[in-house]
Amino acid sequence: MTRIYVLNGHPAESSLSKQLGVTYARTAEASGHEVRICHLHEMDFDSDYGFGGYSQTKPLEPDLQGFVRDLEWCEHFVMTTPMWWGGLPAKLKGLFDRALLPGQAFDPRNTTMGIPAPLLKGRSGRVFLTADTPGWAMSLFYKKAMLRQVEKQILGFIGLKPVKTSFFAPASHPERKAVESWLTKTQKLAAKAA
Image 1: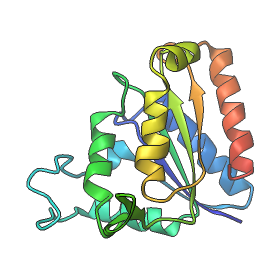
Image 2: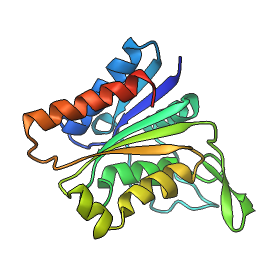
Image 3: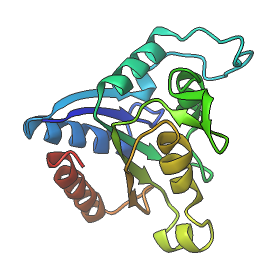
């Protein structure tokens, strides 16, 4: 049994990201894993880091405190998100900006070659990324920049390893067969907590 935390990172109440996250959570739970799920659209917090810094932090709202607790609790972190303008939705980026703090997610006082020590080791990750950009264009034109950002610069930076991505496109107006195929792939990964 694996402790799994699923974050639906889409800011809207209804979305393909939510469908993928709920499918993963239900399948993993049915397979005997312990699951917690959170929906970004239900979270209430100020996404602007604002005056925060190393010496003066902005207090975390209850929903951000819950996010941190669940991330620390889990052994496997799953996130579903769309790609908008080549990056994360603003509220999801704000969640990371506000909640993944020095001294809590990484240690800036303990560095190796200038890189802060990650404080959330011992967890793996899976990202379900939806986009309209075809996979070949993500590789050829954009050098998989967003995948590297999420896998290495965010989740890997705080210690999650390995982090793997499932990329589904085109996602704005997908054919029903495509969605069914994506949900089947999601279920297979969830059953194995992968």
